[in-house]
Length: 502
Image 1 (cartoon, one colour):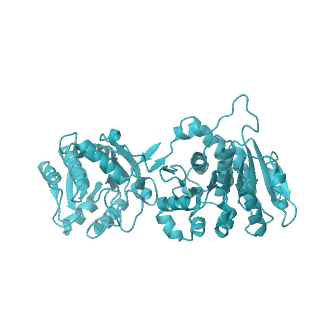
Image 2 (cartoon, rainbow, N blue to C red; image 1 turned 120 degrees about the vertical axis):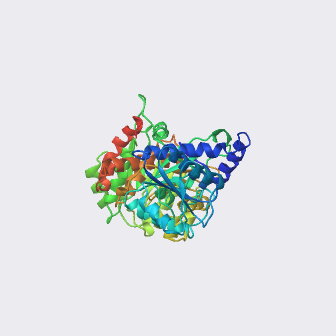
Image 3 (cartoon, one colour; image 1 turned 60 degrees about the vertical axis):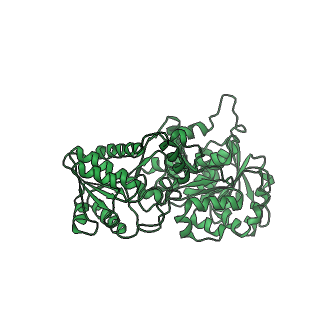
């Protein structure tokens, strides 16, 4: 698990540690780690052009001391202050003493230095920064982006300037880094988009904070070993019932493929049996693809044959179901049961008009899997606001609705109604997963893990998102794919997790 801590908790840990070490020790540890990463990124340090964009605080000091270390190894280091005439005093003195030079932020030399840089160190703002960059720092960010387009490497100190450390929100101009060297602990804004997309590769430098981080993390990214420990493996005594029976309420006369993909996700995800309740057209297509599925056909409008499906241990409801009165009636019956239920797709649209259907779910595991548009409808919010504030949006929805929320998107985040429980962040996936039907596969996969009865809703959702994202990467290998390709790659993804990769 890659844990991420709130800024206030990191600050408290820093204060506790600084009381036990000599003055400046933490800054030197950070600078040493930053310089080491920069040296590794450069083909050779000697003669390389290094630019330090330096703020006035400790973040700027870290960057300047790192620049001094690189200058002592023969790099040509230029420091550009992010505000007129001000730099971290001790860091600037160390850089000058090592042969580095200072450029005026408003002068031509600053722009020329950035344009000529082989590597640019962003030390403008630290984890205490809020909001987008203001001038003249915003201009420095634009010049840095231009230099990066010409091949310069950009390394952020602790956090890309302009990214909110606690949330990942980017509210204006910001530095986009190739690598972020973060100190002591990962910050949530490095894991969650849009901030994560500005951070590049995140490298954690240990400066000794570990024993002093006494507060629980606020976010955590699952790793392959975590997911391997979660995924159930059948033993010699297993049978189809012990492996979990999932009920799937999906598909309609119009939308047949959603049922195929959701049922397939459940089967490939390890369910011992899948019982589908669906319209005849969808049922016929599912029989052709998945003859092992047990199917109950919806014979007439107004008839909701949920009980006729037989015994199940969890439900996945919604993909391709439709949004009319019949769909609402069937979803209401599923949600009235005490079983774990996952609601996706059309089921979420029904819920957005009938949120009282969740009223009786207290104590029963409930997972919803919206994308930003679906969550906006559920919460009477704005799509763009949810995209920009993914972490906060998922937390708020989980608390208000009383369910586990798996918010899909460029960063998938999973929040529960328990405010003290860290939000899970999925580190796998690819942009190629943004394809029709991909979410239907995920709904079946997550439902299968719920049906097996050994994982709480949060863990089942997190493991499913990890495997689904990895399946997308394995299927795509940087080429276009469809949802069926993701579905076919699930067994390989699970084997990859169990083998200890990636």
